[in-house]
Image 1 (cartoon, rainbow, N blue to C red):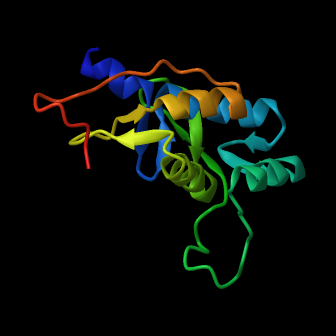
Image 2 (cartoon, rainbow, N blue to C red):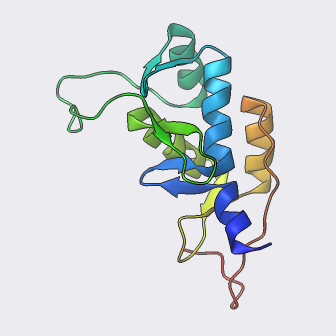
Image 3 (cartoon, rainbow, N blue to C red):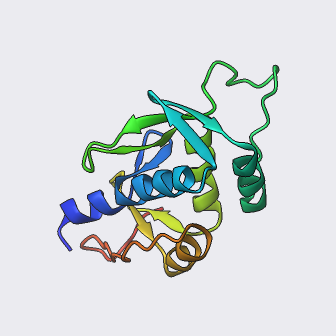
Length: 145
């Protein structure tokens, strides 16, 4: 698959997910009423807090958090999809959880990430999102660290 397609499929944008995957997750969370977005600012609803907690993400606002100046939820315009994906502490936590679950893996030398077979199943089951698996290998066959 051309590198451009791999990059568009799924990647990181700073510390959150972007590309088709990031946009799809943002759409689902909004469509299900878990996140409300207005003018780039996001609000996690009560149902969103429950859903995220069940998914393994606890976003509790605490005054003593080291990143207390960072917004809980905001959007970021996706460079390839020209639509918003989620950023802020929610976007970072969602990205980290997907790595922890083994649903995505870093691709060496790129911001692109590979969706694993476990990820394809997990994204479909949990979010109703299906993104094709791409098998990006460099000339050595290595996927990354």
